[in-house]
Image (cartoon, rainbow, N blue to C red; front, side):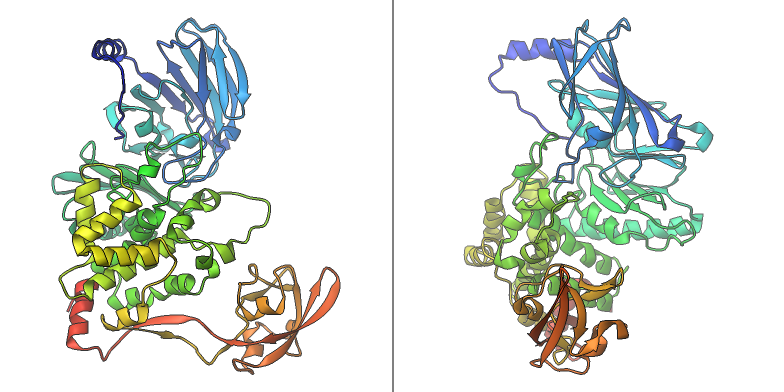
Length: 601
């Protein structure tokens, strides 16, 4: 739960304030009679309103998201009455706010919400479920954010709906949050669901699963979920203390849902648009791993830049390479340690992130901290004007994951008994368990405490404050993994060119430094022929390039805005990297690899 401080207020005033507001709850109610048309009817009653004008708002951001999302656009049929049912005047000072005046100290604010995107950020309502992200659903009032909240969900019993949420249960269909921050951080799934639960170290881990599946499928799936929970518990050495003794996986795998994953303090929303006839299998199991790791890293090991979370403006943080990226590193590693992936599957899966980060020109523009700053522009953000992110941006998820890999292997190959797990244990004890928000400098100081100042300074100066990368080939060799070019003799244009709407075009902007970029060809150009071959006579560009080698100069004919142009293009060798297990690794390398991945003999 978020902690707040009151400054420069006399003790006796705090006491009087506490007595006056102890029983003052904002009361919410939501109903779903018109769920078939994606509507909910919502009301909130604000008692003991002292402001002459009550400022009611919809959020513009959501926990776990860093960009702006204009949730107010789906609100209509707005009304407000006082404690006697008299209609009140409502004005609109901006698109996100309703000002209510003329009240008698009580305001009941009511509206209709349209909701047809059930994911991690938005809300989806239909006759299969009420899938609610709270900032996208519920209005709130400025100056009353610290009040406790009670909410009653009028669920559809005719649809066998049940309620799953991290909110504290009061009675019946009524739940409680200690303040607005916790309320808006508490997604809720109401549907016909499967439930499973198990105690871990005295706390309840609960799976609320909305999808068609047999009991056997659900049992097997829950077994994998619990293997992830225990593997990550072992990384940190202990579980977080969940506020009400329970953590809930809110999982919705339905064709009318929008794939996503979103962390919250005592729960996560994991969402997939899985078709109804597809077996449950391991649906979104990687997202389960990623989001549960957040129960430590981001929910409790929390960047100071995200405290308190701002529901009115974009939230910018320079720590997302650690908060999201290092979490992404442990996402896959956890699956291997939990025996959900083999060591071979895990190692061979590393090359995707490495290729993206190593071969991206984006590192020439921003370091990991600066990449993190880009989140408000890229984190499910929308723009109409074209951007050049394929050249200037490297996702802080993947960038951080690759840096986490480099740090882990660097620590392990020092042969001093060091590893990233134990560094995380230290960070957890200093900043997570104590819930003291951290800065980048704090992470550097903690690494110095763990591995020595020289090592920490070198890592941060080269890879965090600058854009260099660790020497992965050397590091991999020391843990019995080979990193090499997958097809060094394969000729490449450095771009992906595909047929779309009967036109052959690049799938993104020309990559800075690629043969196509150097030749002066761009994304708007339509390719007519390559090396004398009409593209309409082949299935893909590789058929043409197979007849050439790196260094060959070929003719590329394109059409630009109705004019045909010809360019000389010098082919390069493929830069694609691959990671594989080294079957000839020595005993020491194998020991390091087993300690790293947790390979079972």
